[in-house]
Image: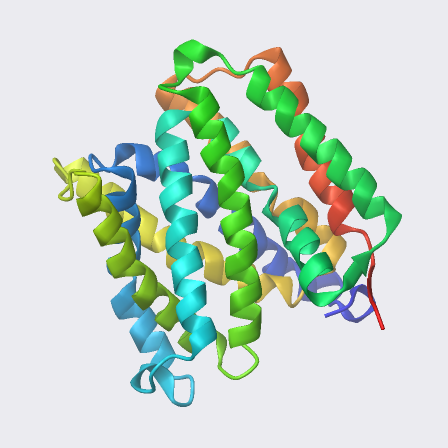
Length: 296
């Protein structure tokens, strides 16, 4: 929906609330990952496995639903999403919650860059400016982290940056899959493909699969709720709000994650991290506002 066609006044209140709640919910995802008492990939497995029954019910309302085999693009989307979660969950375990979340939020910039090369969707110069600011901010944030608050901050930061790339490929594959299928069916099949891959990764790395406590199980359930409700709320709201509003509000995710990490894990941001985080998110906002032109 274009900005000119967006609802106004009271009609925008509910989508705005849904967008804020969805963004805040996803901001708790790295917190739940830390609390699962499992390995990083195993946490991703439970996140998707527990969400599958609900997604299957949702898919039943989508024409052919979950009864028709998935297309090639759904399979690719599932593969890329499994890589996305694997890299990001390891990043969350190795670096600070704030770094992992902010660096992963470079994904909108990466999506536009990949679309630039694959689909000739040429962005305006303002996108290059936003990309430059975001990358400078990411570098400052990674370099300004307190090493005592992370197991292996450089590796965790690198994995979080790689997550943005995997998400870009997931997004593009899902966009292609959605051309011939409803959203709920595509989401169900991509999740169904990702789930066994994540379990295989967890087994291959010798991770602890079963949560070791009741709190760990609750964290796994929390991840599943985030996967369904958080993403669902954002997807619903994005079609009912101006793009400029949505692009800013969804960046509440790293703010929520940083505050929760500070309260729960005593991960206090250094001054350099704060500066880098602000620059990174500002660069993402600038880049997302750039118009895109399709080449002939």
